[in-house]
Image: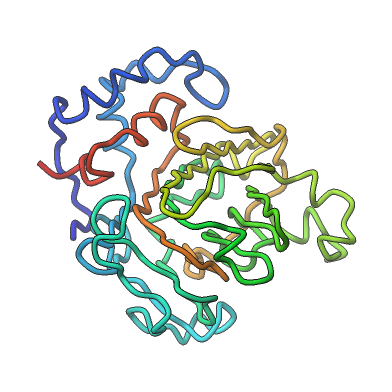
Length: 305
């Protein structure tokens, strides 16, 4: 495990995977070109990587700018009772079943809180918060998931509707796949109405009606967000390296965190395989997301020789 140390990247490692995406017409969230200071897409990815868990050597992160340990707690409300490791027999490392190497397997609806601590691993900022989350899923949502909503990942210090970034599968078949980016609950929903009661809840989601997930196939999910905690924050969802759709501009409410309580929550009611979790400290460009998708050996290519 690499902790608070970055290794240099051989540019030749990524030339092949970058060649196929060099001609993309859109670069960043606002369509501008990457910074001239970035010598290559490969160097840009390595420079902003903050966390990577491949699950190939266990459940601790391979690369972490914060705590590399995974933790289990009785619930997210009891996160202060968390202990290192996965204390749930229904969540295991599945040897050889991953997109690359091994994967984390959720064999039934998880009854515990499983998370990596956010401090250091998520580059949260009170002034302007940008970043990218990348991971791979393998499941048949309609066949594998148990009844109810399912969130493969949530990043928050509180709840899914309170200063949070997440994706979910809807509760009933045929299941939609959705991206939610919600600021402080007290700001966007001061009356704390339920999603069914709040007239603007669904309008705040990015929705994919016919997502490409299926059994025996890996799907790459990327969430890129920019300018949160400012006026006009934005978020984009990518599937298999391609921009699917973006939430309308204007995520204006604050994202106020108790940083020490921030968590990268995994497998909330999820059933399926989960692999190659990585986080970056800025919104990746379209080209970079495409390059990330094409890495021959996963994100480890960015920091291992």
